[in-house]
Length: 129
Image (cartoon, rainbow, N blue to C red):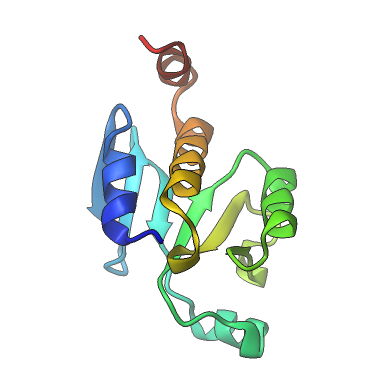
């Protein structure tokens, strides 16, 4: 299953990406200063909302194109993808990092990057130039 090193490698393989720490000290990856994947430890309000369903392992947050994409991921595999009330209406999904395979993680990271990259850069990447 995936690790933070996998996230780092996959994110930094994408054009114009950098790694930084958030104001809370969590790892995050950006394209042109726009975050696309980041470490998102659960907060007290998240734990309260999730109750016994709250995972205890590492949590990745990934941008998605829209709320529909987020709901589709959650419906497709709720053992990996989930959300909390904090993210209601926000195009991002939470991921149980220890339950996602590296191939699926790569797809998620690339899609998150495409959702945040400038259009010209995304087009160049998709065209392989």
